[in-house]
Image (cartoon, rainbow, N blue to C red; front, top):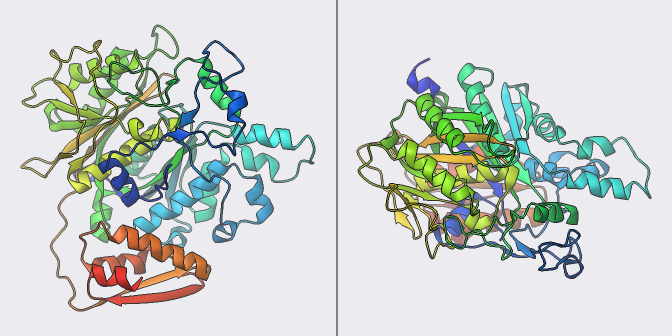
Length: 506
């Protein structure tokens, strides 16, 4: 296999995150502007006043009352996915979210979902929590079991549900390594694309906290921040912040993406997975294991330490984990550097998405490479004194920083370390410059379609927001809209000569 054949392109992305961040453009704006999406726990989930007590030693109470939560986890357009209402009602909302972000990621990649039927497309899903099964079990005390009960809450069904919806014939795997699940899923997809086991891959993760038990159990680990803020690498780091959301990515061999003229967000150069082994405790991070997974990923990518200029760290904001991570980064990537290794953590924006955290970290890096800027890491006011900052060539980005193309391709690393002891690191390179081509003159036709008039208006509104941040030629935008979305019942089209005209017409 040639070096070019071993590279895998990310050609599409979808997300659902707190604060109304429902697409990559909205995510970029939130990251760029330094948005902290944490807030009070939703009152619709449980009685927070009855659950809360600042005393960390109360086993039946939560000392945390904030996090980054999705506003709506119940809404779902079952008809759009050809799912009967009783089946949809029995489905874990995490399964529903994964269907939604998968469809969005494919549209972002200009791939109509119906075009993947009977193809060797793989599906790799990181999923951990089983809260909906607890809710379902409580409900079944007063309602009978039916044919949908088991399928709706079985975690392994998440990947199968996506593969069945798309009609694909490739691998369909659910991955659970706790906090590294979705990045390990990326590693598995990269491996299968290289080997030829699949020709396209949908990789994703989802994480929801639907019961008080999940919050109480996490409080018992004493790993949560009592203030609900992630202060990665700060002297005041006191634990991770709760987070929710879902992310999906579409992966394809770079040679195939270039052949097909696909948009490329970034290129996966290499990855590695290992385990902490005989560490001080099952959940205690191991510096030697982190160093090993970083070195193994470098070797897989065929890169040198100084090729990597930025790392999206695991960065949970814990007193023990942050210093260990920085020391490991310095030991492996700090050699032969002429400039500090820059690091950051998206968990300071959206909390810890656990099984979906790695996919969100990767999406942040892809957007930073695509936009030529590194977003700030939040809540760092005084550097952690347990990190020898004067002795390690590592610096945290606390303000928006330009990251332009240079003589060498920009490369970033992404880390995810599971509470299970499973560690993963992925190396990402900027997309190659697009091949020059002629842009058609004259106005373009931008098609819009949805299942109802209301849905069409909502789609148009989302396009208006997204188009406000683009510099793409109108011909490319129109071509993407025509290729990437399956036609629905209610349709219209907008004709315009430029982006401003498109936005005005919508």
